[in-house]
Image: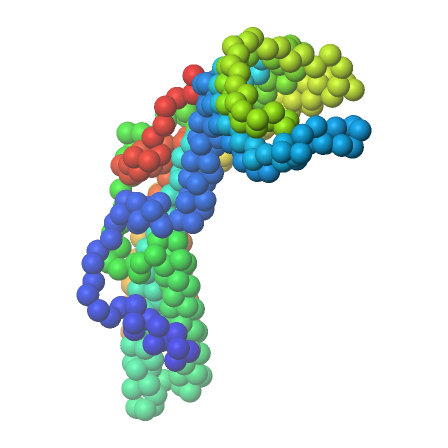
Length: 436
């Protein structure tokens, strides 16, 4: 307990800088290891695409060698005792240009382009989810702070009643049972207060892990209700049309189709234009230069490879079916998440009205019970029960209020527009060209 109290003191000490929800999300996006890993994967696939594109350009290879060469004839004797060994040197240049390979290379370039764009959209989708995690922890912190204030107020009110009953008991105007009753209620309220402190500390630690800084002076966020859809069906349509996870799944399907086209390139010959130039000396025990140059069109046709090409084509065709199933699953998950978020937002909005009415009613009842207790028409137990009802009603309303705000942000997340709704811009490094 001392450690937690010390930790709480450290959190609340030092200079305080108010941090908004939008700032928290922006900090978390820069701080998140998950997003860093996904960005690295995106950049890796981009470089893979650049490497594949390089195969469409001329390829130049320089070869050089030097060493000692000794030549013997089949008879085992030397042709000339002075030519038994020579220092041999070789240098050659080969330049080749791919002319045709059954469209395998171009299909592979397109495939990697689709995959890179899919990884970029996956990065944006994960940023949406990280943003929702920050929204959730931010709102939970605000809720915890408010509930802690309610718990502290509850303790203070119970202590005031305890002091009042104690004064009456000392004057003989109240029984020991009443004093015991209020003592138990004070202990219960203090226990609730400590539990609220513990919950707040836990949430602050989670916030620190996600954002990298301590939460100080949080500000109640106000979401842009103009971005909210008019119905669940409208929300689901916008989600399916705009969600980056669905767009990424579509691109994965396109990439799988290009993979089939790449594997089918094995059915065609590979045709290249090649230039060879060699400058050698002292080759095969013939003293002097040995030079040649040639420009040729070459063909390499794999007539039979044990049906490997057929198997590779069929394998990639099944990956197309896998990608199609993943796309369908993603659409269903997005639609489900959007429906659940809409239900929560719509029903919590209705619930808040009733909970506010409940708070107003139990507060009136509490005030009446206190007045009646003061004139002896109500028992202490009635007053204490009324206090509990007010505390629970307020706590329920506070929980519903922040849950309602969270539901709105959940809806934005389900539609794939949470960072837009928060007015948080993605880093420039995340911007990429749309896959062609």
